[in-house]
Length: 491
Image (cartoon, rainbow, N blue to C red; front, side, top):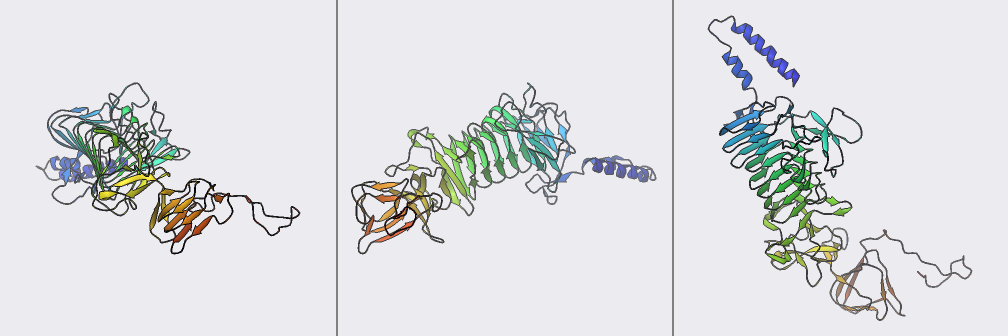
């Protein structure tokens, strides 16, 4: 950036020499040229052609509060450390291009608090980041669960343990005002086209972004490695629409990626790698398109979308809504509140009615003890069981019937073992079309005769989804203890 500024200065000096040769010509045009060198549209691709192209002015570090109503265009001509929170007042529209640089506050390790940017009710922030800026910014990646410090902090060090490079423009170093919104505190309208909100912290809600009663729309960029008690990446109490971009690596006790207490509509982008969960929702959650909410964990346990009780009916889960078709690449893991235990007789609905069967391709249970399946009106439900194909290239089969130690007759259905099973009173008799998954377990009879009998006209398919992962030890028959002999092997 320093080289760029020196180049501009050289050009201006050259212009001054030329202008001096022509009396009556002032430096006004040259000065105007310097002020309008940063021009593009406020959009995801920062287009430099078309009627939407505008001119941006450098953002001063002491910008403070902008209270005079109007539309402003600012960009970072270098890294900027704000002396106080940038406050956008009622009737103020700010279009901010990060221009590949860093916008930060230095309050993370002190007692002071303050968001990097605050948008008041009636205010508006449009954030973009010029394309083509690939100079990295280096962060020290500390433990994000340490709420008494920054999850990520800028560093001059470029290599070593826990050093991560982030390219493009960055908003960082905020500690949420009043415990809310470390990076951006939004009570108005916030639209994010690009840039990264990284390494901010809030003790209560919204480490990266706090969206109160306002509207937050995310088309691109990333919200990464922020930390809070609720909503490490985003806390939403208003309307949050996510059409693109990523929310990754954030931490919170609830809602590591997103804590939703309002309306969250997701049509694109991905929420991955957050802890202690991906999306914790008490409000309305709408999904469509190729959304991805997967790979979020609480330690070793998967927690992607956590559905809670319906405030209008505490005896039921508040389901998410598929408001338009899900498309290729969509993947949504689901966990339900622990007070709801799905059973075969009483499965738990995790969506409302749908226009198609989404249970196999797009939804999955975070807990291996449960499977998603298609219920009436194409409602996606959870019930005990597991799901896989019988063989390579075959369709998925939901194994949802368990065999008891009583044995007996198995009619048409898909059965599975959850543990070693000893048949004490009866053998298994197959009278219909039966698929049986051993699940790495042992099916053993204590009675004489066959363990399984397949009746005439019946069909039995046996598979083992955990084949080779568990070892069962047998003792071979021997007359002298060393030489194998004819006879039955014994467990």
